Length: 416
Image (cartoon, rainbow, N blue to C red; front, side):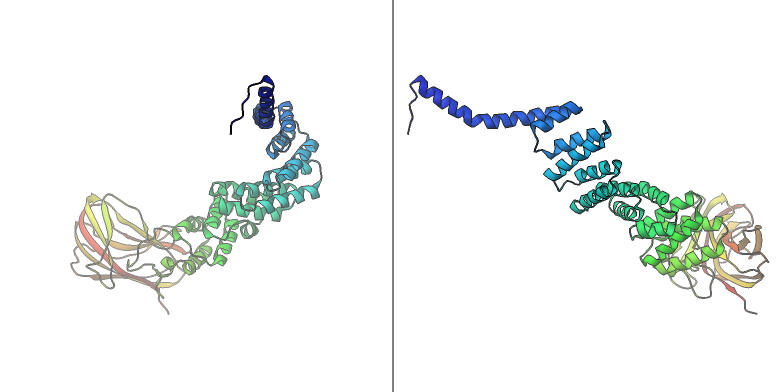
């Protein structure tokens, strides 16, 4: 069906009808564009005009509220605009947090706390909301509740870990309480906290956190704890270091399997990978020596340690192990060597008291033992002996080449 518009009146009528239909949409589009343009100017007058042009848009009210709060420092008007924004969009946590901030400045603590709760109820899964809520709770002197929010942040935003831990330490004087209330229940985070405390010289605080770690009953990667062991050794807190190792063994099968009843040497037959820390063997790589596990030639068991020298001057294999002894106690050592060396000085076992660098024993040297041979010693520890180190080394630094195998070491108390 066709409508013929031949007269000027009919054409005008249709034009007016079309204009009447299109004008609301045109006005709406123009006002939205104009409001967006004004908001980008980011000054109070422009933001107020944007709110007037789009009174139902929560974003413009929130944008104006931020300007009023942080630029004009008008907390009263800011609170009003934030509340309008929250009414228009009650699921926007940032608007509720704005209300909380404004009401806090105005001294309305109950209103501020209520707004924080509203923000957390509408958005409980966003770390930034939890972080801002936590800081507002701190300002309201609700520290325990704030620590709970920081705990969520640390658990869900790795980029906030260090900043979060530093804030937690400032807020809570007790490291153990901080660990229990503000750290997620994973050992890795606790260990980072311990490391931070140690770097600040707070070893006693690190001890408290370690006790919390042991109560988590979760596996721990041994290498991630060795800085704590080293700090205990440096502080000469040998009893704490010994207790730490026992507790670590309860959390790590890699540590538990190293100990044989009655033998003070861990991983004494080199059956397991070297942990390079704690009370296991420590290894310092050297281009002069190759160290590796050997499976084709052992004294007993499945593996031995094979050291190959490359004709250079060296005094030791680079292998050592810390061992705690009791003072004034008789001990017996044995170890097996098999060697094919070209050198004036072979390889031997030595135990050194780290307090005064005194050698508690040195075995004979193995140079050309083509069959496995036992090397042994007995000694009595000194009155002040506690921490010692067992070395596999030499008495001199002459040129040396060839290889030596090491296996089945044992250090035990001699019962009188």
